[in-house]
Amino acid sequence: MLSLEQLAGLLEKNRAAASTRVAEFSIGGKKFNFNSSPAIMGVVNLSADSWYRESVCLSVESAVTRGKILAAQGAQIIDVGAESTLAHAARVGNAAQKSKLVPVIKKLRAEKILVSVETYSPAVTRASLEAGANVLNLTGTTASKEIFKIVAAHDAAVIICYVAGKNVREVSNFDLSADPIPMLREFFARQIKLAQSCGVEKIFIDPGLGFYYRNLQDSAVRVRHQMNIFLNTFRLRELGFPVCHALPHAFEFFGDEVRCAEPFFAVLAALGKTDLFRTHEVPRIKAVLDTLKVF
Image 1 (cartoon, helix red, strand yellow):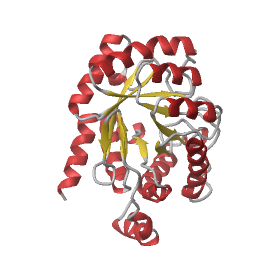
Image 2 (cartoon, rainbow, N blue to C red):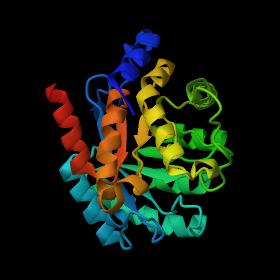
Image 3 (cartoon, one colour):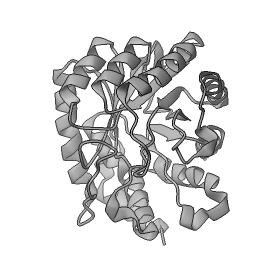
Image 4 (cartoon, rainbow, N blue to C red):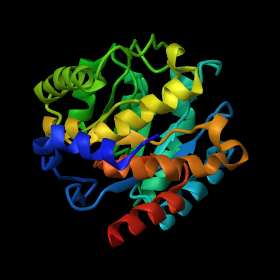
């Protein structure tokens, strides 16, 4: 059971990290003040395999409509993906991903909406940024240098996700044997150094809590791990860059109220000083963050 005493102990052990400030920058002409105001990223899924039915859009028109609605509800960035991260989902080739993503990106940018694209493919990255995407949500590790150079050439931002494997579809196990923050910090430090050497200046880091690791199938183990990372997020801000979190779900605990899971995890993520919240439930997350500001 999470307790006030545990939170107090966590802060006491890491008090210096709690006051760390991160880089602030503009994306597509919009300035983000992460140290004083966290941002929200809404999700549009172009894959029929995506489980969160409310976010699935199978036509350009429906995707653009959802993106506009999410922006009106408070999302500063819209994240679009054409391949589900679910383990059983079908793989989607580069050509098919580009055919789905490019028209959606162009129409959302025509509406002055900032767009992020989730992919681990260099070809999809290039096509998406050429179409006007502002952010790459990078969910792989095998082509990092090539991808970072593409991002830099387009003056885009990148979300570097922690992936224990080649990409989000080929993950191994998450190391649960010790405090995960040093391991995450080491991974991100390497990737940040590589990104900067390629000319990338606008960087987010994402611990990848929504990925389907084989040794996190037990719901209690998975949720405990996710809660632990959320509350310790502020320790990663010592790397100097804002932290993004994809808010997960706890089906076994929330049942029919699973759409309330993201708002619950948003509270923990906010306490851990998350800077960018990736969510399917934009109005609910905005309400949580607005309410926390009142205190």
